Image (tube, rainbow, N blue to C red; front, side, top):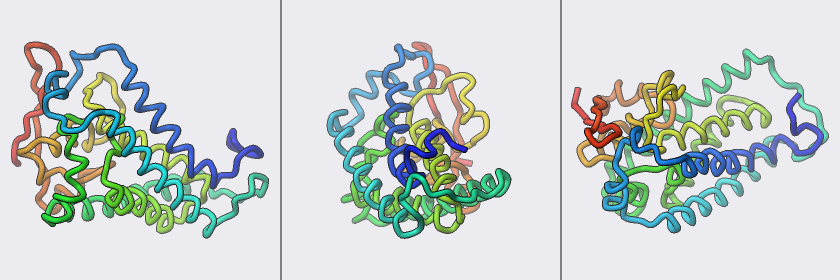
Length: 257
């Protein structure tokens, strides 16, 4: 039993809930009071280094989400029913957890190799992936700021493949995609907050991804959004240390293994 049962179909929730969650969660970060003592970059660095205004970032994210929603609707129409009243037999919780874990591994694998190739192919980096790296200092709302082609290949296709290979139902997909969105936003939030569960349970976290956005780490730490396994296996892992800045906050200092 889920709270939307009888009101909205699982397919509709799977399409639009991740978008709503994205703006709610990113909005919370954006509306938080000044937290300079937890920032990984100073506000001055954000203003000076980022090459694109927030209004453009918001438009880019909305465009990607429009494409994502369109592909999701097609995927769900092909694989399931759009009826809000039709009953589905859900697998046991343990089976659903296994499916979610499989989807996490598949998504990580897909995104690692596509992401890495976009850095290695000069044409793709210059004309496609470099758009994401215009945010040298990441922030939450810009988590999905990508070129539309990258958004389609990396995120939308990655999500679709994860859904299909894991064999999860549309209802399980609601939770998986919302979790993936929250994790992606958190990885780009630019804050090292005490007690953040993602920092506790995932080595691939805000500081880990911040390394990738730095010049010396651009060819490392490709893994996203969950694990760092592929980086470690294929020699693209870069360690880091967190150093407290005198003026407040932390500095992520990359260090090659």
